[in-house]
Length: 219
Image (spheres, rainbow, N blue to C red):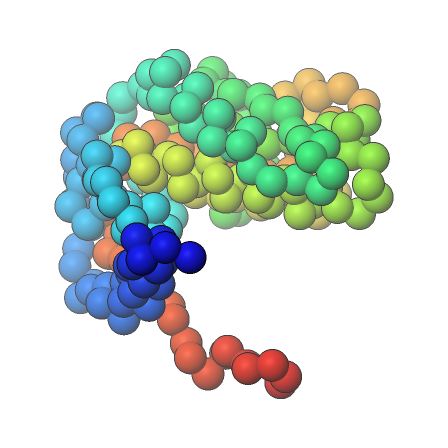
């Protein structure tokens, strides 16, 4: 391995270990930001260098309050492109997406369960769906869909948007309700509803690193 490669690896590992313990835990109140601008404490998409991706990972938080402003089609495309870049078993990529901007439909989605009521006031929801016809490796598609959904959340954060993953799968009642609202065909399983928009709040990053949960070689 070259000296440059070793140095690059050192920088990455240093960043990985330093970010969690260095995160502010001040509990500062959330502050609103205008469309297209990353509010305080949020990842700046223009960052470069070995720590940019790690900063995005370590500062992402769930956002449930949004500005009254639409999300551009270009931003939606970039978020979905990131979702489609996720790893999947056998590279099957068993995902489909329903992009919901219709206010009446968002209001219906907000009634699916008690933890998604804020969707009614959001500009956009992405229903991440599993296409079972593409999921030939039995039992792996929920893992694939989780990878895809996490990529969407990280991309939204990197682009200055706020987002939250609201659960649908594996609750059969929720799956059925969302399938009806979005008119999904047979074999398409609603997995998650990602509610997103320009954030009206900026939750402070939280350090969650716990050394006690790491076991060397055996438990």
